[in-house]
Image (cartoon, rainbow, N blue to C red; front, side, top):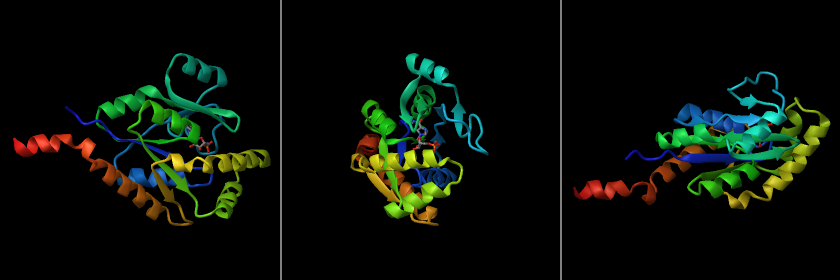
Amino acid sequence: MKKKGLLFIISGPAGSGKGTIVKRVRELAEFDFSVSATTRSPRPGELEGVHYFFVGKQEFEEKIAAGEMLEYAEYVGNYYGTPKKPVEKALSAGKNMILDIDVQGALQVKEKLPEAIMVFVLPPDFATLMRRIRGRGTESPEIIDKRMQKARVELECFDQYDYIVTNRDNDVENAAQDVLAILKAETLKTFRNRDIKEHFFS
Ligand code: 5GP
């Protein structure tokens, strides 16, 4: 029987740099990325179906009602959610999958799929976090303020995660290597390798 793929959930406050880490991890290891649906507007350079599926509020609510979302959350005034089918398909095909989602969504996934591996990305300290949120330059002061408040709430939740990865300035490589180390250790877990015993004695 084909082994199921591993489901990695990466969360962390805005400014934690988790998007950059996910990008680097995917260059170094094979992971399918779940493209989320969102009602927020695209930022310059963001592409439909690559960074997000950009949908209207009504369409998003229809997807929720039709049971098409594995999880969803409201984040700073917009809906964000993970379409269920691609995740199920990838995992049953034995592919590893990575989700970059907020804390509310992560906890919903963990409840439905307890074998999910939860990784929280943190900047080295709060001052760095504030600087990074201000520094993106694509958001209005009001949104920046909301993202900062949200970051504080998210930070309260990090002990619900399995692993913490610190993302220091200019050191994405180190953080990506930490995620790969987690991948390696999780791959070697006994419960994922019961077949080894059978093969060993046969
Ligand atoms: P951004 O607007 O900066 O792209 O994303 C804002 C937040 O929404 C980030 O914390 C990101 O991880 C989260 N997010 C992105 N996609 C999803 C999703 O499908 N579900 C949930 N719950 N959060 C998401």
